[in-house]
Length: 332
Image (cartoon, rainbow, N blue to C red; front, top):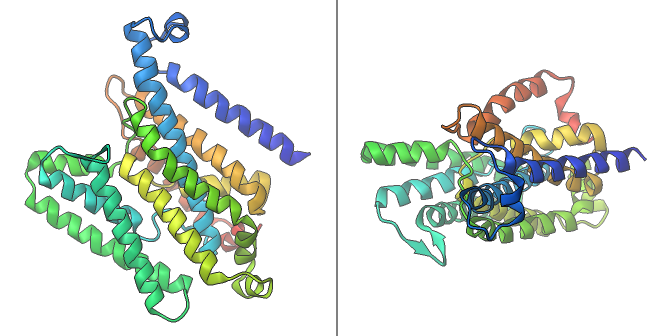
């Protein structure tokens, strides 16, 4: 009964964020402009072409990051694991920095050059980490984690080198992108991001039973018939592809993937079959609210949403570190 109440509250929370967030902003949107999208009014175009796509992209990105964080915390049995643990963020940032340094506007398969470059960097980082993990016998999560940390340091140093080579404008664009932000105009961004998120979420939801067993211990998972190599590989690629799509579109937005699963465990519990949908709804609505706050705090200017999530995530991270037995939170 409690879970039903929590799900109902989450549904209202997510629906409210999706419906009300497009109305929030520096310019007031009359209801008539919303109900008649073909009127051609300025308010109607702002609502349907700028605010609604931005809210949808924020919800997709937040949901993807939250589900990714939940998955990594179960795989590594580490409550501090984040969607960027495996160096996906650093690889995407390096690809974006290369695209900025190239200085030419281009598009590939309908995807803008900056987005395409960061997505390619994320995929290269994912392939490298997977290759290092497979080079050792088995598919150890410890080796995968260390390989991800190594790739993250490598790409971070290469980004610094590219910034040194770039001029002031290019350096500013790189730094601004690294702060993370939702800058969607039109339905194109949401349509590009949706397949990545849908695929990753579908794989995670399909493997929630295996996630429960892995979180309980790899020995227990093996004794229950789980093929650890295949399951880890499937989850690794699905989540990395999902995070790579989000980072390539929005830049690195931190802490959403760490906070959302922990908050939902307090209300739902550690069973991933019920935790995954709850985390998806909460993460999406949470990032929508953070982005709305970023648009309004110093309007008409905007704060990158990555700054907002970092301001919230820093104290949460410290609370998690100082809490009693944080290692057990993945199983509680």
